[in-house]
Structure formats: structure tokens, C-alpha cells
Length: 94
Image (cartoon, rainbow, N blue to C red):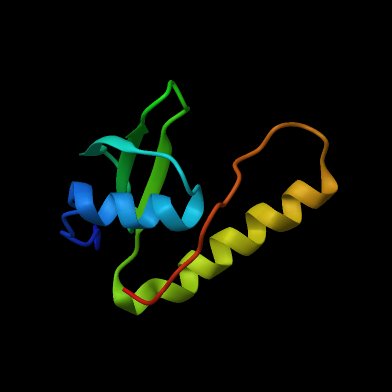
């Protein structure tokens, strides 16, 4: 069962998110990625040859899952010494 929200993320919304997460970076493109049964997943391409960012948008009823995922990533990152995902921003304010 897929509960992926049908949220559309505009260039302007992506830029506001990037301004909070990595100030000073310009958004070049935003595109919805395939996959993500629970969260809508977007790739945000930045200027100046920066690596792209991944944005996950959870349905309102599952914001707890977003916080859980961020906590798991942080906990694992404290215990291992190999590169893992970094969470730059967690926000459930819509």
C-alpha cells in the first residue's frame, strides 16, 4: 500500500528549504524521484557543483516517522566510522 503524499515542491519552496539548511546555496532544479512508498522524495540540484540534496516529504499523519528516521540516522552516525547520510533539517511545520 502506498501512502506517498502527492505534494508538489516548487522551485521557490525548495529554495526556502535550502536557505534554512545550507544558506548561500542556489537551487538550480527540483525533480520528484521514483520510489518512496511513504514519503515523496525529491532531488534538489544546487549551483556551484555542490552535491544534490534529497528532500523527503511525509504525510501529515506520519511526521513521527520522519523524526524517527532522523534519530536513527543520528544514532547510527555516532556509533560507526563510515560515511552515512547526514540530516540537514527536520521540520514538521508544513
